Amino acid sequence: MTLNEDIDNEVEFRFKIEGRNKEVYEGIPVELNIAMDGPLRKILTQGLKTYQLPERILTGMKRFEDKP
Image (tube, one colour):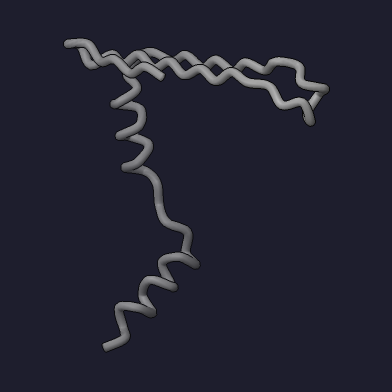
C-alpha cells in the first residue's frame, strides 16, 4: 500500500493484495489492485461532513446520556 500527497493536496493511493488458497478455485492465484488519485482528502472530508448517524444509534446514545 502506498499513500502520497503533493503540494497541491492531490493524493495518490495504491493498494495491492496477492494470494491463493487451494480450497478456493483450486488455488488459482488472485490479485486485487486498487489505484485512486485526485483530491481524495477533500472528497473524504466533505463526505464525513454530510454523514449523519442513523436514528437508532442516536437514540441508543441518548439513553446513556440520561443515566446518572
